[in-house]
Every structure is written in C-alpha cells, then in structure tokens.
Image (cartoon, rainbow, N blue to C red; front, side):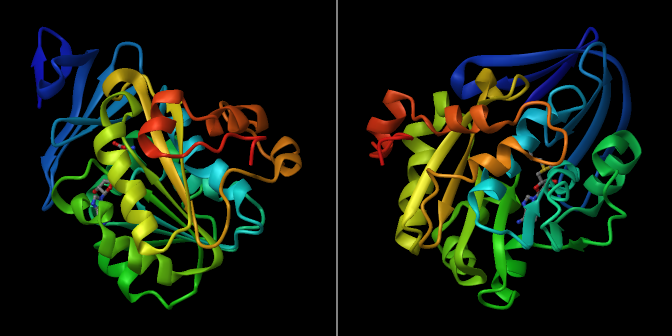
Length: 293
Ligand code: SAM
C-alpha cells in the first residue's frame, strides 16, 4: 500500500505498523500493465524510483547494494558459472552485474512483464547498459514455466530477482518451483533468491524458503543479510542453496582480484554476510559460521 501526499511518496507496511517515505520532485510515468501498476518518480535525493503495485522496487541511488549482493556472492561461490538464468529482474540491474563476470557465456533474463524492462531502459539507462552484450538473452514470460521447460542440467546458476511472494511471484517461493530448479541445474549448481527482511521475515518467509529448498533436494542452504535502505526495515537478504555444493565457502582470491568495479561487494563484505546473526541461526537451525565448518 502506498500514498502520495504533499510531495512525499510513502509505502505503508500496515501489518508492521511502519512506513517509508521519499520526497518526490515529479511523477514521470504511470501505467497499468497486464500484470501490475507501474509507477516511476523522480525523487529529491534518491534519483529515480520504480514502484510496482505500491511497493518500492528500486531507486537509482541504492540499487547497487541489492544487485551486487544478488549476484557476486553466488557467482564467486560457484566453481565456474557459465550459464545463468535470472527469473524476474526486469530492471536489468542483476543482468548487468552477472555480465561483469568474464567467464559467463550466456545469461537469460526471464521477466513476466516486458513493460518493466522498457521503462527501465528509459528511466534507469545505467542499469541497462549491458543489454546489448551478445551474451544477454531476454525472454518475456512466466519464469515458473520457463524453468519447467529448460533442458535438465543445463544451468549453473538461477537467480530469483522477483517481487514479494504475492501474485505472479508467489509460485517462485514454492516447493514445486524449487524441484524444477534443482532439475534445471548442473551438478554443483546454485540457486539464489531475494528473501525479504531478516527483521520481519526470518520466522516466516525465510524459514519456509529454507525448509522447501531442503525438501526439494538442495543440501546446503544459507541466508546472507545486507543493507537496503528503501526496503521495509532497511535490512534485506538473499538465500543461496547448492545442488551438492556447500555455499558457506567461496573463491575468495578471485573475489579479491575481480576484474571489474563494484561499489559494495568485496571479499570482506562476502565473508561478513556469511556470518549468521544469532537469532537467525537459532531460527533457521544453521549453526555453521564461516571458519567453523
Ligand atoms: N528488487 C526488487 C524487489 O525485491 O522488490 C525486485 C525487482 S524486479 C523489478 C522484480 C520483477 O519480478 C518484476 O518486474 C516482476 O514483473 C517480476 N516477476 C514477478 N513474478 C514473476 C514470474 N512468475 N516470472 C517472471 N518474472 C516475475
């Protein structure tokens, strides 16, 4: 739920009794796509803002935190990721980060709503600057069906960069989808999913993601928290799981010597994100800390 009042956009989290506001210069765009209401604003201090169905998706100023943490930890955990699928991610920021890895040979962005990508090209061009990369492929359709149809064992990494688990994204947080994802992955393959707020969702959404991933056959599951100022509580997470591949260890030397620029991610940030806050470790039953395994 959101409101626009005296130059302020406010996203209201009614069930949590909290809200987050950004001061707005102007509304740049509004449309009802076949899937959702899409709004773009110019803010006073956070650049452009994209809102889907009243929920903040991203701003120009702080999206690097989310996009770097949704990609580089997983890409540096996999031994040699070559074929990557992004489910959702229509703003193209995740695709841009994936394609920074020279070893990636093919990346697919599977977004249900083409309008999100078209409007990102217009209002977030900096996120779309790798869209012409010959390794980039676009499919506009349902990611659940796409994963069902892809050849078994053909992917190294699946990144689920989706909206909250309601509407078309609900099935992306489900056991059946994780089973299909496991089949689609190579041996040693990884899945990483945006997994909401540690503060609000550890005992609910994050816990059920862990349970379902394990039920589906992923034997290693770990949640990495990171800051995200414009999302509820300002604290967000991604959950990574491996197909017969531990996810608490990564190619630290390669992360240190990465041949590209990042603004948040580095090997130290990655190590830090692997440390489970105590309440999460207790709730998720994941006592293994980096260095302890
Ligand atoms: N960073 C954002 C967040 O966590 O709020 C997510 C950004 S990205 C814009 C999310 C995208 O997921 C949306 O564009 C939405 O259309 C897409 N999406 C939702 N359900 C989907 C599905 N079943 N298949 C493919 N894309 C989906």
